[in-house]
Length: 105
Image 1 (cartoon, rainbow, N blue to C red):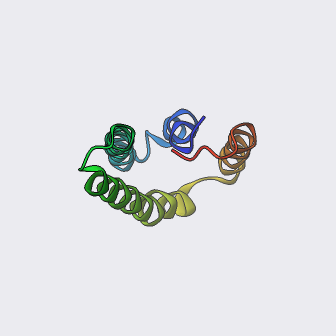
Image 2 (cartoon, rainbow, N blue to C red):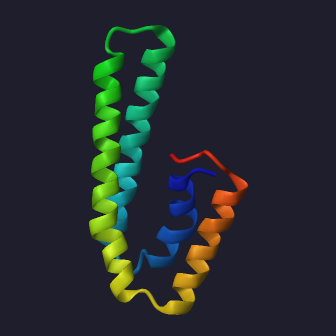
């Protein structure tokens, strides 16, 4: 399970009602990053000349998403998430990371 998959399976359903627009934005960004990653991986595998522009696009989208996530969703959660749910989410992400080392998308 990737970091994105863990967010989509664990975090987003838990907070969607209170942060609908923010969660929708994060899901849209996940889709954009996945599409860019797939395009750059395909270009790398085929030796396509557009690999570097595609890889730069992937990097830019991922970097933008991480900044948005940190400033948006994480900041909101820090202010509004109640301690029991916060602990449950942190533990679920820890388990996901332990079960899937090295997978980040």
